[in-house]
Amino acid sequence: MPKKSEKQKSEQKSDLQLRLAELPAVDELLHEASRRGLLPRFPRALVGEQIRAQLKVVKERVVRECLQVSEVFAAAAFWSVVESSIEEFLAPALKPVINATGVVIHTNLGRSPLSAVAAGQIAGIAGRYSNLEYDLKTGSRSIRYVNVEELLCRLSGAEAAMVVNNNAGAVLLALSALAAGREVVVSRGELVEIGGAFRIPEIVVQGGAILREVGATNRTHLKDYEAVLNEETAILLKVHTSNYRLLGFTGQPEARDLVALGRKHGIPVVEDLGSGNLIDLKAYGLAGEPTVREVMDSGVDLATFSGDKLLGGPQAGIVVGRKDLIEKLKKHPLNRALRIDKMTLVGLEAVLKCYLDPLTVVDKIPTLKMLTLTEAELKKKAQSLRRTVVRRCSADARLKLKIEASSSRAGGGAMPMVDLPTYCLGLQIEGLSAALLEKFLRSRHLPVVVRIVDDWLVFDPRTIFADEFSEIARACQELLSL
Ligand SMILES: *Cc1c(COP(=O)(O)O)cnc(C)c1O
Image (cartoon, rainbow, N blue to C red; front, side, top):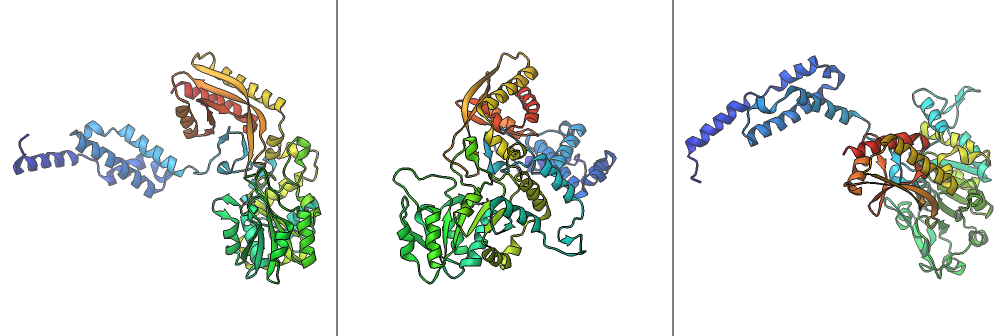
C-alpha cells in the first residue's frame, strides 16, 4: 500500500476531530445525570469518574472502528452502565456467600458463622452507645472484659483469663510479656507455620525472645528439654500442630511431664492450642482435640486459643491460666494494641453463654452443629437439597444430579486427619463444563462456593444452612440458562 501523504493524514485527522467533536461534554452529562436522578443519589466524584470512563470507551470505539459518535453513543445503554458501575463500587465488598464446600471452619470464607442470637446481639450494640467501660451500678468506669473473663474461667476451670484480637496476637503477647530478652524452648516437631506468615520461630523473635529448639522433627524427649534449661530459660512453649500430623516413628512428651519439668525448675509451660474447644467432641465421634479444661487440669500454666475456630465465636485470641501470668500479660503495652472492640465482646459473650449448658450448646452454635451432624442427617439434607433443586428446575433433561457418600473437613487447622463422613449432591449440566458452572456460581450476587470432583459440581450439605437451599435451586436454574 502506498504511503499516505502528509495532506491525506491531516485530512484524516480533521475528519476524526470532527467526529470526536460530537462527543457530549462531561459537564453536559453531569447535568443529564442530575436530570436522571443519579445526582444527588450518588457522590458527584463517582458519577464524574464513571462518566469519563464510559466516554473513553465510546471515544475508543469511534477511533478504532471509524464510526460516528451517534453510532456508538446510545443514551440508555450509556447511563445504565454508569449506574451499575457506581452501584457495584458502592456495594459492600465483604458480602455473604453460601459455603457448599463442606469445610466447616473455612478461613477464606470467614471461619465460624455466628449464631443468629450472637449476630443479633452484635447488631443491637453496634449502632448505639453501651456500657462498654461503665459500671451502671456505681456510675463509675469499669473494665470492658470482666464478664467474658468470668465466663472463660468458669468454662475452662482456669484461675484467670483474658481476651485479645486473635490467637496470633495472644501468642505474641505471651512471648513479649513473659520471655522478652530470654529463652523460649520449643520442640523441633512443633515449629509450626499456621499460614498467613504466622511461624513460631518468627513470632518468638518478634516477641523479643530467643528460640531454643530441642529434639528432632519427628521425636523430642523430655530429656531434650531438660538439657537446655538454664537461668535464661523463660518459658517452655508447646504448640498444637494444628494443620498437619507427624505419622510413624514420632513422639512428644506429654503436657503433664513437661509441666512436671517446668515446676521442678520454676519455668512456666505455655501452650498454643490453636483451636481450643470447650466441650468434649469425643462424644460425637470427633477425636484428637483436648478440651481447654483438660489442658488446664494437666497443669499447663497458660493456654491460648482462637475465638473463631472450634469455639464457633467471633475472631478473638483467648488466654487462660495462672493469675500472676495473666496479670503480666494484661500490664504489657501490647495488650492495649491488641484489644477487642465492643462487637467482638458482645458476640463472644453470647457464644460463651451457650456453653454454660453442654447439652444444648451443639444445637446453638452453627460450627458445632455442622461438625456433629450425623451421616443420616446429612443424607436427609442432601436429599432435601436435591428435591428443592428438582422442583425449581422441573424436568430439564440436561440436568444430572446424584447423591454420593463423601467426606467433609473441619478446617481452620483443626483435626487435620479427621474425615467427616457426609453425603453430597453432585450436579452436571450437559454441554457445560464444571469449571464454567463453578465460576458462574462464584460470581453471582449471592455467590455459591462449591468443589469440583471429576467434572461434577459437588454441594456438601454439611455447611449449607437449610434456608439457603432455595437460593441454591435458583442458582441451578440460572446455570441452565447459561
Ligand atoms: C490458627 C492458629 C493460630 C492463629 O490463630 P488466629 O486466631 O488465626 O490468630 C496460632 N496457632 C495455632 C496452633 C493455630 O492453629
